[in-house]
Amino acid sequence: MNTNKLFPIIGALLLIIIVYFAYGLITGPRLFKDYERRVVKIGKTSYRLYVADSEAKRMQGLSNVVKLPRNQGMLFVFEKPDTYGFWMRDMNFGLDIVYLHNGLVVDLKENILASTFPQIFYPISAVDAVIELSVGEIMKSEVRIGDPVKALK
Image (cartoon, rainbow, N blue to C red; front, side, top):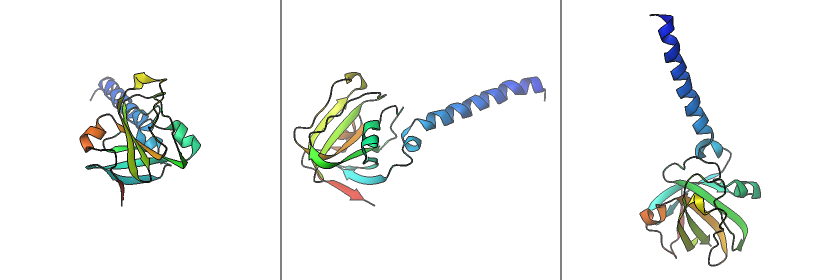
């Protein structure tokens, strides 16, 4: 085979490989490799959640993530109950937010778009944990206020 014809093919393959790995570096699984993971059931659906249990991890949140994989999200854990605010800084996709206190859903915010930044979203009462999911997950899972969040193995 003519080597002049191989160069464009090799170049295209290298470009695909570089794009694939670059995309992987800024998506959840690679970005959150050092995070604890928990599997929980909310409503009718199970989710794998990355645990943001330090100030640095909570500040990072899902910012700069390109896409959240299906049935995944982030669990923000707080040391004491309060009305913690959430915003959409550096977000590339919309979110549904599930506010928790003592393992029960106490408030829900749906279809929060990235364009809402700098608006801050607060729960109606003090919470000790918050779950962020992709837009539409609250409706899909039929999550309701008062529902328990069940830890799975």
